[in-house]
Length: 255
Length: 266
Image (cartoon, rainbow over all chains, first blue to last red):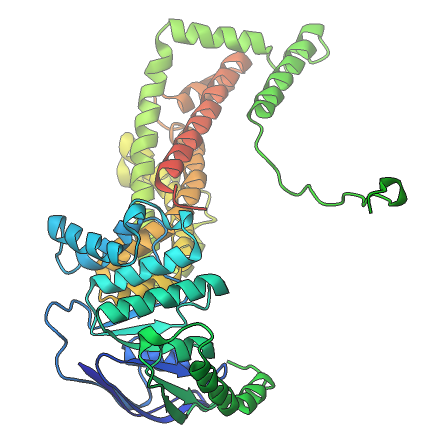
């Protein structure tokens, strides 16, 4: 299943957030969206998953979601959004219960996704007992449980320290290599974008428009920390963004 | 570096502002107050009309227990308290959740609740007698009405405080409205609801005495009122002590429920 953004524009009252964004997200690819703060990256992601409605333009699903897909467009949030009163396996089972998956069928899915995110030993733990990196892995496990067609990741690693971030990026690459998934990955961190993105979409500052789309050819599993090719790509992205970021930083906030 | 005498040690200025619980201190305060009253009444420094002797109150309590009257008074009071508070709290929680979730219900009912809240419910007792009769009905109604308003206010405040990102998460996974309310809103609001119940159940105990002012033969409230009108301070205090103990018991039960239901809190 592919996603097409068709001429999306949006403003809050008289405040224009984004203008005429058109983009194709093809299946099996990770598309990273980067841009200066306030350019509407997270808003764009909420449009894609239907949590908010753009003023003009539309988001299209091309083709049908694959079989066994419970929730085609599935988010991973920056602040994890785990229910603190449910255990790790309870948080995963939450998203299965509404689809009538209970008992042994649910247990099978939960065991599988917890094994894929290396959480099998923590099934009974409560979120308060987990580190930030483990919480986000629970959220990833929960997303995998509904077998999504497209994962919508809203700065998923931004609340974590830099070492945990590296480890989780490796985990994501492992997951993708074993079973390629489609993802839209919003981040302000260019290192994440060049590590995980097949394509990196650079947005301009407000009103957000697509400035450039950078393709990164190197296969995901060959990208490593401190890779010279990636450094070059990252430098290129930063050059595109630097002046915009500076101008965005100097703006008054009136949301 | 190694010569300690060269430097001046940095004065400690942190600490404090973090009260810790010390169980026995509370008990100590109770005991010393009672001992002080006992000493004052025995030496005659406090007159018998000002305060009864604590040991006499204890003796009255003992007599009450021995005669079997204690449970004759306690049983109807407890059933009034439980039935009345259960009705008031359950309607209060439901209305509070509706106010927390629906704009029209909120706009319509919040001013109404604000108007009802400050009415002294005791003043409405004659009205309740006309509506629900002189029997148990009016007593249930008074206690229920008194518990209802604080529960509503606490509940909708608690629903407002439920983390919106969790609700968005529920929507993004396609959970049904009812699932979101049951599995996200309700547990998320539970801490606020329980701390509201602490207040409303204390109010229920206060109203118990008021409810037994009219047409109650037995009951702690009736017992206290009778003692009061006879100026029998020992019996009055014995009754008051029972109400206090009831309050401590209710608060302990809520503490227990909190520890069981809210273990997930950090």
